[in-house]
Image (cartoon, rainbow, N blue to C red; front, side):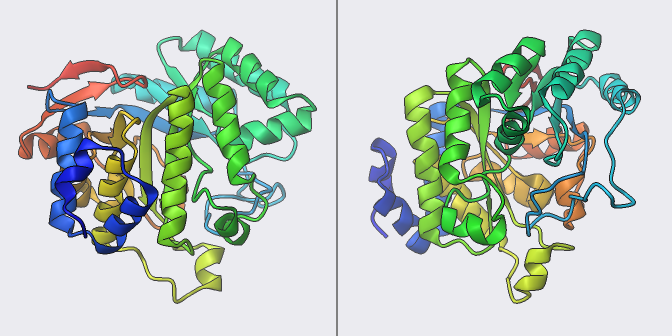
Amino acid sequence: MKDGSSFIMKRLTKEEALDLIKNGDLKELGKMASARKKELHPDGITTFVVDRNINYTNICWVDCKFCAFYRHEKDADAYVLTYEEIDAKIEELLTIGGTQILFQGGVHPKLKIEWYEDLVEHIHMKYPQITIHGFSSIEIDFIAKISRISVEEVLVRLKAKGLASIPGAGAEILSDTVRDIIAPKKIDSEVWVDIHRKAHKLGIKSTATMMYGTVERDEDIIEHFDMIRRLQDETGGFRAFIMWSFQGKNTELLRLIPEMEKPSSNRYLRLLAVARLYLDNVPNIQSSWVTQGPYIGQMALRFGANDLGSTMMEENVVSSAGAAYSMAQEEMVRLISDIGEIPAVRNTAYETLQRFA
């Protein structure tokens, strides 16, 4: 490994980033990522958001091999939430001071743009104080196809009804070689990037994500980072990067490749630090305590993360695959304070709403 201090001063190349993943000393990576984090966030504030994941349907035709959440339309436990059920979930969120819903589902084979417009409008009109952060690029792509309209029109129409931003779900690893194995029905990596490009150009901000720990190589991870960095150079539309490890319980992928090992905490922190160094134009990096647990989630704040994510009032997707961690706001505040940083509640736009010190 080369001397890491020089990397802080200039943009990492793909070759340098790959060397850090393969050969970097973990403690040194933590120091480098912390230095980069301090450059971007010198005030020492670490944020989190009070929100709720609402999965409006678990019906999905994409059949991703890494997913334990989806159901087919005729399955006994398949569902599409009613407005009343969605309203009840939002009311519960409001009672704890929540400001955002992460709103996404399976890729339903029959729901068209009008259904989504009506739903977004209902939520936005009834709960204008709630930010709708919803619909992955895969959902948007299929809504366009089944409705026989363009992706741009889907985005324009949903924005007009109250959609504020879109999540980065569905990225997994932005390598078509990997995607063809773990999710062969999903959109190609370039299509994922282009939908976010179109959203950004329409003034719809988004997040970028990565799920690692399946069949990808280190080179695929670097290519994933690079695709995000290049689009961010072009549009500036990504607010944050969120990374988590594959959760294999109950998934077809683990049944197909039973020898697949669960990624270690060392691996998570290593990749997180390199992400912070490589994605020099993405302002926020989120810790994935949901998959890593609260204490590795806290450790991630020493490896470049400046955001502890969501209090996660409800989460159905990764919990279906075996992740079972939960965390109250008070514990988030304690974990952040314990490492000498200032806890703060934020909104979807990463604006501070309340500081705790």
